[in-house]
Length: 205
Image (cartoon, rainbow, N blue to C red; front, side):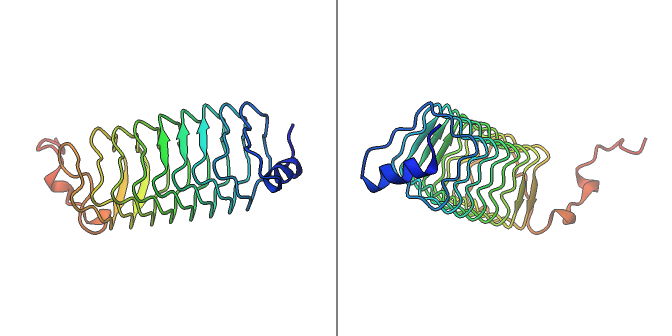
């Protein structure tokens, strides 16, 4: 198993680093500059990327369940067909990041910068997107069921074919969003819903 020290040595030597198919479970890579590194097929379960720089990296078919990306820089990173369940992206920079056809359920994106992010066809159920900025993003076909969007910004985004049942929208910014059917959010707090208007006429029968 490759250690943090070995990776730090390779970084100092300026080598092109390919960590594909490595077993890196639980490794601490916090605050390292890992830009443009490849992690295809690697086991990175519970890895610590807090404060790390992964700009331009490519990660496919990897296990990142429980990974910590707090305050990390993932600009223009591509994550494809990866397991990101229970991961933490709080305060992370995901500008123009692509998370495609991946399982990201039960993850935390609170206060993340996600402008122009791509989340097509990914599973993001039971996630927290509170205070995140997701404007100008492609969220088409993503599964957001049971997720939380409190004071989230996703104006000018594409949410067509997204699954939005049991989602909590509160005080969101959602100008010019592309979506099929009626808007699932309301102006202001969800607590202001007038249920008499949406219940069937025979509800109390």
